[in-house]
Image (tube, rainbow, N blue to C red; front, top):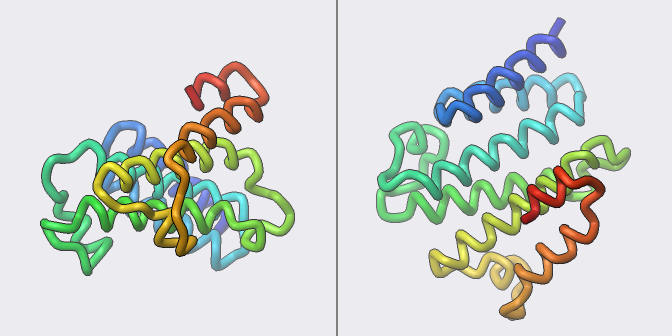
Length: 168
């Protein structure tokens, strides 16, 4: 059935992500996300949106030069702007995933801690690139210790040793 195929694509995409094959991972995760959206499988959408954001973050923070597949995925990127634009795309995806109105039943709540961790890592990577995404989004000034406070809060909210280790 359609859901089974979408779930299988998502699992394969996650496997390729773990192996560092970002191009194939993003391709499979995007296909799964589109199908899950079409048939209304919200938990799968949330999971795959988060995995795509993670793949984009890892590409932006581990590659020295723009990978060729990014030009197809993000047609407006240039070799000069690819890193920042990839991080922005990751931030936008992880932010959409965490919006309460996009998940009224809380079906993606088990991904919220990982989403928060990833979002803060993206914010920090953008900040290191000279972009204050929080100021851009909020239209205001962000306190310098905001990221540290966010990690402290996430650590305090972690329910298990595994979750605390991920925050640390």
